[in-house]
Length: 606
Image (cartoon, rainbow, N blue to C red; front, side, top):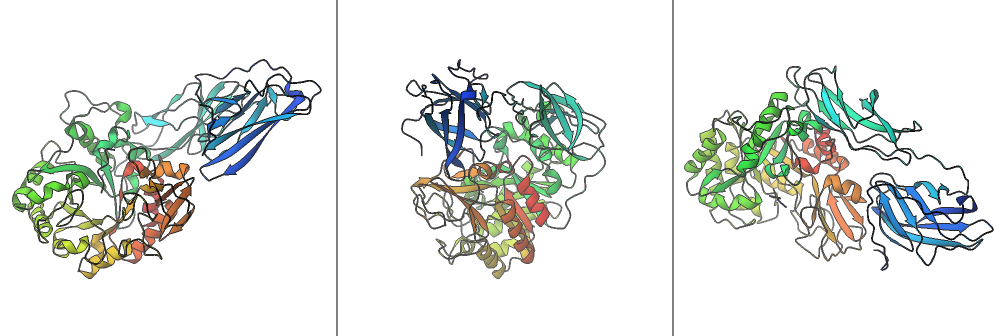
């Protein structure tokens, strides 16, 4: 588990967003005497090259021109030449340069741009009229509003809010749709829906209406589960469906416990690992006290819909997890200690396993939050081997630590561990007594991802989470199948092994080859860290172009990424069931889409 805090023309014109709609220059000639046409000159998956051509079809010279069009949400101009291109929201405007505004009768001029996203232009206007030469201007439909957010969720009501849509003539009002049916039409960008049923799941979208009463596309969907209504039924089946929730996700990522509810994920999982507690001085310790139990959440950020107060006994993520468990009593929460950054403390802890276990028990069972946690997870990267730092505590250290934890926590609590997935000969699985420790744990979270990545800056490109081996794999044994086979061969029961899924991709740049095995120049750019990006971003910015070893890969421009999709997750879940594994886990919730499509893929196929 990683601890994550963390080709255009040379004469392209800088693009500047405008606060309002761009006004038209006074045309020297009506658009009825001219046409504008668009051609896509190239397409590389996540982007494209475009060219507009303005032709004078009249008998008099045109002195200047302005072309306007709309792009769907997610499509944009990244650079342009031979025109000054600006935009307001999804509405784009291109004006002639000083040297190409004049067009003689029968002549034409062109300007080009590079675009990002999959969309094509619509609602074209040339000097205020239609681009086909007619003088009857069309009225563009409004854009999609922002995906709604929820606050103040009760047994029977929820308050919704969303970002405004845009329209060339102005937005008149909004239709609020519950489960696909209009429940109200409002002029504001908020609405409180009432008369709901307690303990019930609902889906909300919003669409805008313009002054001509045209409706635009619906927004993204928001899943809401009302409070009350008795016990929420747990996911079907007996498989573990576990997700990691990171304490630091509430900062830059703005991902709160409440997102598990609004995404619909809470009803589809069985367990949460809260990451991470620290390991220092031979003891378990708080990781981030502010995030853990001090941060005051506002009503709209809170699972319960009630704001924290300055004097309440427990705030922070712990209180939010408590509220989540009240709504979804089937969910068990474990506190995970260590991780990539803090695993260096386990060597000291292993010198006195009993004292370490006592410190962990005292912290997890602190009366302020004892009801929040149902056990402990140990994320030691890696016993008697190297991760961020190297451990030399011996092969028996891991077994001794896990045995001490089980003895202290007893059979009424869960005791689990994240483990290496290095199935190579002489690899990390062989470095520690995982077989001996198996009798002390409920299960192992086998980290079957991060096998390959841009820490090998020049490649070769390879899927970071291969299910099986394939021709050309950079290192034998670096697959899910090899890791699980090795664990089972040493005596770890299959039902105590969980397959791991990364909700992110790893990528390189400077890559020309589409298939795996290409060379690179370094890591691809990522939002929080080079060489890594969330699935929710890659899904749109670099869609998959192929699969290898049960994992998707994508080659867009000079970047090459690998990541799991709902389809590849379905395949991995089928494989896990056929192997008799105990279930699946993933790192981590915030990489998923707003409607939890990866969590759904795990839940639906396991």
